[in-house]
Image (cartoon, rainbow, N blue to C red; front, side, top):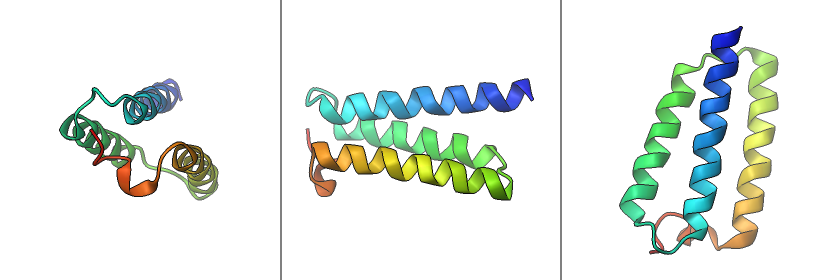
Length: 80
């Protein structure tokens, strides 16, 4: 169970970093994309059960909704 919690904490930290980087124009699109790839790899390693998938997906949707309020979706990764 501790490993699952550590994985989720790491994933959450990377997601928070990505949100910060999206708002920071000094971070290059390449760096944002690289972090996004790391997040995808981390999430793929984490095998989710059925109920957890729904809970994590809902949380991810909330995060994406918040970020899209800050900037138009097409500029999330491509803006510099």
